[in-house]
Amino acid sequence: MQQTLFRLLLSILSIGMLSACAEKGPVLLGNIAYQPPANTVAGASKTIVGVSPFKDLRGASPSVLGKRIIRNDIENDLVVQGTVAELVTAAVMDALKARGITVKDAPAWDLKAETVSGDGFDILVGGEIKALWIDVNSQPFNVKQQAVVQLRVSAAGLADKAIFKTLNLNSKMDRQDIAFSFDTVESLLSEALSAAIDQLLKDDEFKKKINY
Image 1 (cartoon, helix red, strand yellow):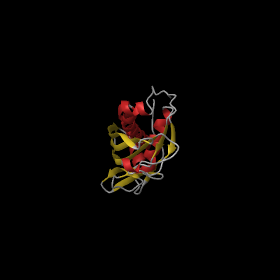
Image 2 (cartoon, rainbow, N blue to C red):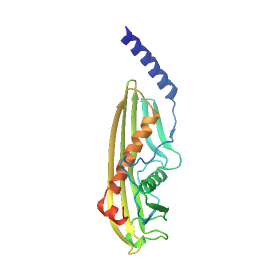
Image 3 (cartoon, rainbow, N blue to C red):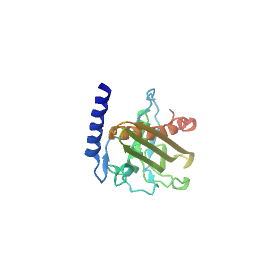
């Protein structure tokens, strides 16, 4: 009897949540950010890294990074304040700061050695966003989410104007819940983006160049 009552109450709550959120139009996600690993330690490097604005090559609207499907006739674009390119650029800078690296804004860079430029930093980092997207299928008691991140990142030394590292950073994460929450969407996107960026910070050659 208690289990039956519990299921009935859960059904009512679920239907209410779906009804409250089942409106057409974009939904703003406001809490997507880089999350450093638990064992991250800030070093004492004196290297200064300039981070160039990342280029968005996804072929999607600049602020859209996902879609939530509720029913065949109801879906929401998931958007961020500003642009996805700004989000990724800020996340890369935060990843470096978390390790004690001084970072500065760098001019736009096309990732070619002959166009390396800047002032006030030692290393230039830039990149392209091939994918940053989350698909959410929100059905009663069955919410499926999949986040995909693909970045191409290059790093160059200002002194010799030479690219010393280019990496393809890839991350894919899935999650399944019985109830929908925008918090879980933001959390999964943050985890996927952080996992991709951490691949750069774990690269031995890159770590050596930034003296971390």
